[in-house]
Image (cartoon, rainbow, N blue to C red; front, side, top):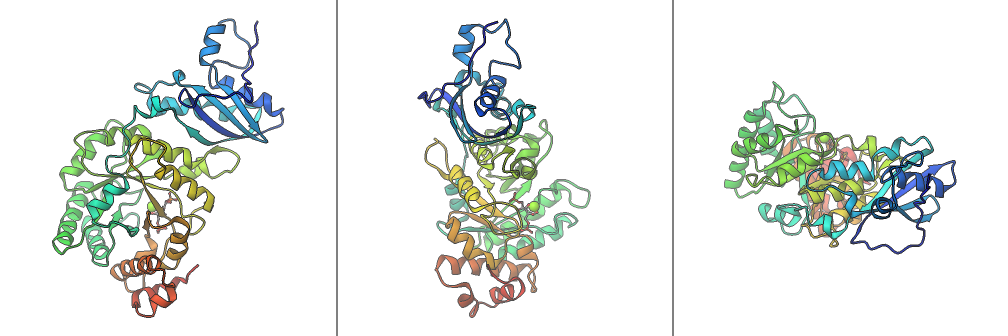
Length: 412
Ligand code: CAP
Ligand code: MG
């Protein structure tokens, strides 16, 4: 049986003809062998030589290990290996992050990054609105968007949810959203909630304040487009999809539905199971790129080393770049920093991430000693202080709600 080598170390490859992946590999095998095993498993090979693999198939479709740098392995997969129109992201993921995770010879493997050739990118549409579109709707050209997640996560009635949002908007917040575990429970039916929220958003609009609320439509594949159309008809100004539990195809289906004319806020619940281990899994930056291709308008990217969720500054910065870079032909995704946010964190976050972000606080708004409106005001005051480059403690001297928040939670 002819044996084939997947190693092409040092070979220049045409980035417009290959999907290029970077993997961090932990193994007891010589790294070249492990890299070859990945390229084989994910393209034309298997654990043994096979009589059915011929030169022409191998030459055309085999993955190529083009670089090994320490434990970082670069593998280029020919564009023709991918089935984009029918197959789409599920098929892409089955190549770039599929069986390889189960290979017994690998102690760990992490897909750290991916780049796609133009021929694949052009088959995607990207966001309909993107960061600029969101800013336009909200009439907020420069400062960070400031949002909340209605808390408690579950249990509020439609009326109480709407009342929370009215208070948050009256306090100056530009955004709010359902939490990821709320969809259509008995205590808060989605139709009643969406209608009640639409009413208070209209009231805020009449009072001169623009605000949007993302209604969580995460559900089964066969129902999600219809639900998106329903909530839009009930008055939703934004919709939310949990991308990892629903699938990238769900985001793409809703985003590419011509009847849907509202932005999509993309939550990433469950991502920690896949992204948290530094030696195994898939880096969030890969998911950022896929969400952008599929048409998400805003996406959770982490909180750059502050807040309650795991995540380093470098990781958040890489996610932000993937949402915003100019090297793909799509509108830019609004990066959302959420998870354990409160006013005293805002200056550090803005220093790290800049102002083209959406900052979101659930507990950091609803936990304010004077309630939701004061919590919203404190968050907005913190953002204003950061944008004006005034030290937050200084700004708080003349802004009572912010001072109360600093007294309660401190600053970093
Ligand atoms: C934040 C949040 C979000 C997390 C998810 C929560 O609430 O609603 O789901 O931000 O993390 O339930 O934790 P708090 P990530 O503001 O009360 O923490 O954005 O990293 O995916
Ligand atoms: Mg949440």
